[in-house]
Length: 477
Image (cartoon, rainbow, N blue to C red; front, side, top):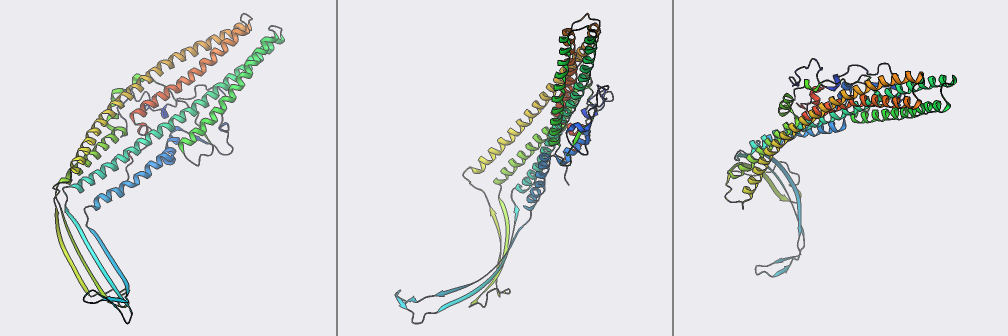
């Protein structure tokens, strides 16, 4: 089910998820960081977030382990169904015996020496088949079947929850890589600006408008920015490595991330109450708690069935033969037959309180499962609302930093013009440059902080996979 109705202005904000917030590059005039800066040779795969999520759903080792664990669900269900079927066993035995005695006992128990000691051999063969079926067991088999089904459902939800967590981590690493790539673009822009500053300062120095120290100060800013660019490039390469690990696709030997960045929006467009209601209905975390409750309920019913009598029917048939020497060894057609049919009733009169203790323990587990469900619901609502508060704070900070960047950029333009007119010193210019660079970095970082806060909100609600258009239901036929 899609997460419909969460955002009243869904059309205005896209689908409300980060992978659709691609509004374009903020620093469109900056130097482009091409795919080769991923630090790999050969063909480079440029990933969109959708590509990364799809690959992770197919190749991530943790997710594959969760899927593999689900393969036990069908054998567990067959085992529960098998309790309704009879037990059938067949056997075949053949063998040869020998006996050698040098003494014997007379009628009075006195030992006598055997004048002729001989070895006596014999052989035998037997075949048997038995069939047993439990006619009534107080409904325990039905409860065991229900418990197996509930456990399989719990395992599916657990795998779905793990997939949502993995997709959230992949999306987080993708955002980090995009952030580092955008930071590298910003640093390259600042590097180009510092190079222009050096060119301007050099001309002013040649015109004797400034001194040598001012020129060296500008060159020092340039060298510092070059170091910052190198650090940003290394961080971007490490971010791509972390993203590749999170995806787990062995074919991604070299990769890059798309150029577009997440576009923030006013969190007031989100219906947080609707999101809470949706999470309480469809979150894998709540579903897993409900499934655990059903497992505990089936286990309690199964323990209570131990107080009921059991009725069983069994039948067996066998045949065999016995002969001297090896005449009956490996015989397949014995002539002696015997068999029987029995009906048994077992009534649990007194079991030294073990049944009562088991029922009490199962009842406590059921009540605790109920409380766990309530606690999970409370924690889920608290997490969603807390993440929404974080999102609102990130939005407010984003607007403030955007305004700060606007002011710092305008101030730098003024100071640069005043520096050309020799009304501002080099220190004033350097201070304005640092303030504008800091504001530029902060604005970029806050854009991704907002994206991370939004991801945290959807991750808490457990609908990362749904919003990304990836099936997390884990239905296995």
